[in-house]
Figure 1: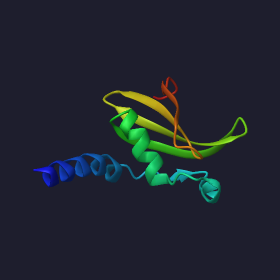
Figure 2 (figure 1 turned 120 degrees about the vertical axis):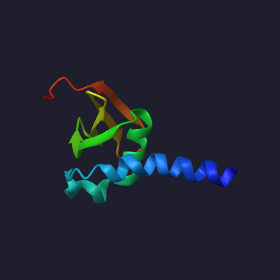
Figure 3 (figure 1 turned 30 degrees about the horizontal axis):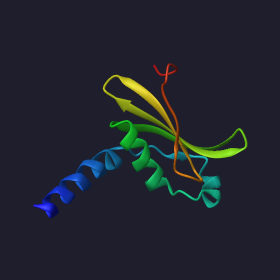
Figure 4 (figure 1 turned 90 degrees about the horizontal axis):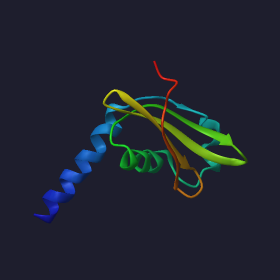
Length: 98
């Protein structure tokens, strides 16, 4: 039973990850990040369960962060994940989407 629960949870996390093939903007900063892209995506999708439609690794305000646009239904959320600590530093509705 426990194995079935773990398998179901893994599938639930992997499906949105596989469904999104958005290229990473800012990949030149990956060597400076302590949190990998896959882990940052998992953190963002745990905060907003949807599909990542855009992703970027950027230097902002002296720090390094991943920025994900996560589509949940018809609403797009911008979820920021600190690339050094893995903490969610932003979760807002992106008003700049079409």
